[in-house]
Image (cartoon, rainbow, N blue to C red; front, top):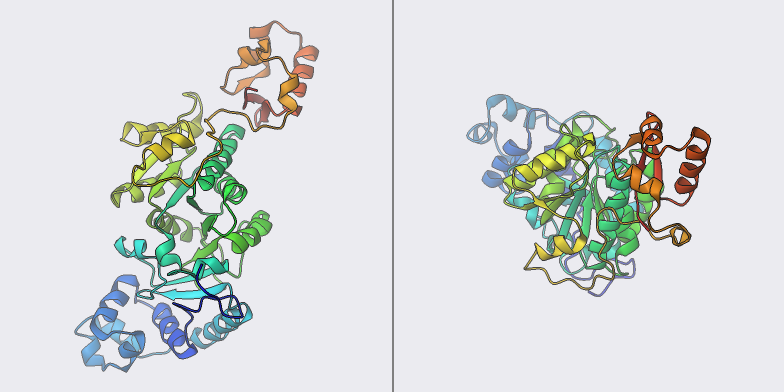
Length: 403
């Protein structure tokens, strides 16, 4: 651990900006018609943002269009308000809140290999996120865990348990704070990570002064205490639909590899997997039932060359350059979450054998077992209480564990 100032920040490599520097970066980010590509070209030509604004229109037009040059000479109308808001946010919690600019020593170096790295990153995180080079050196062992917003009960359990086991082994879990697999992955990472290590990184599609979805407000606070919340969007940015596919490139860029837990064929998780593959990074996928729409995306990835994994150990063995800190459990997809209650149930329950692991309706299950409706419903309720069967939409049931 590096030495800390009295406010909890690192003595070495303190990445905090001065207000004038922040003002110039925000103005560049807000200038209409000047996107990340043009901004990087300008930074290459003129150095820091203030050098861009000090340049003549003629000099600017040697790098960008006349329209972009004219826009750079005008102050964006919302600039001063955003500057005041952002500065107040930084001062309100200097131990946790940061704005990291492209080229900052604490900017994640892995993002520089992307085709379109963010110009600015807004970060809120635990003090250890800023030590020993901050996020720049903290990205050496990250695993993205992504999947459906509407997973099956087994998919949610897989996401949580894989993430917990991988966090126990010393990996930082990266995901998007969405409902479903993302949330389960963050929860598992928080459960498994050792104290003093970054448990998880949540890349969000809003400003960091907002939590979306609202159901994850408590989870976001826990992540800020033991991990990092990260966004390329200015404070006040609402949850616009176009922002979420774009943030997936950051998830893929931060991580060394990507694990897809469950995904339909049109899932946004497949975007993350594609971006990771284009960056030359490994993609892993957990297989599922051939009858489950939530497994078809994973099966498609496996057909395209993603590595099929059934346990956290499978993932670790595919990362030969990484030496795990430890792994106290080797969760296999389909294993139960151990509550102790399942010990009281028959190890070879005929109803569970008839149900298998595919979703099934009551009529089909009744035809397989020959049980009358009252007895079948009572037995399903018992198994549901013990966490071995889940009730799905549409009157379906699915086995999610074997004790």
